[in-house]
Length: 313
Ligand code: CP
Image (cartoon, rainbow, N blue to C red):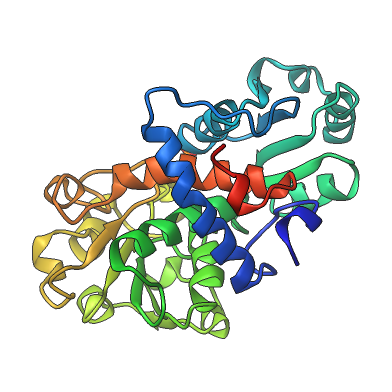
């Protein structure tokens, strides 16, 4: 299915390899726009985009907003914490209110899995999922794939280790769906209490020993430990977690020499990643953020009917 024919982007599970490749290819000229002095093309002039985040965000919300602006769309953020949601307005009424203002696209994040899917069924606006519960975070995975491909030249057959809170991670799920379409050797590793049951059914190898999981890895993608869950008995202490699973230099001895380090942010330094690694030469954490703007520009452009050849005029 061409992206222009797809009303919504809700996840990578049902997205084809060809659609993913088209987004990644289109993001290349979009990244050039970000580097120009005048970061503006008229491509989406007359289109309107609204971001509606029921959960906090720095990277995803801001990068969607600036991506829309670089493409000349009108962009608005609905600040949920100061909106009429606080007066009890229902999700359905909030979405309808936004829709009748004339927005073409809504980018939304919600704590409950499936919320963007519900919204997509109940609005004519295009819906982009910016993270729903523990389900999917498709644009994070797209920018991760872009970042890996940019450095390695290919995604085909790479060994990718995803480390940490697999159970609660929408980033892990979307990465698994995306990477598996490119024949990657996907490993997941973390404490048994943070391992999603039946994750192996998604075609990944499951490890509990970090050094074994990173042996021969081309990429290590480190998940945020959700400190807010520390009191739910999922691991004894942050120190204990860090001892076993924090990515630091000596834990990477068996990975490929040129292993790439990814983290979606925000990072807990000293818990899931050491500062030495986060600030080291193999870490691509800041590049991921830049690439997130390019990938989101590509996505907005393709979903609104553009072809790759007219993307940078
Ligand atoms: N990676 C990510 O989704 O970051 P934000 O929560 O800051 O958007």
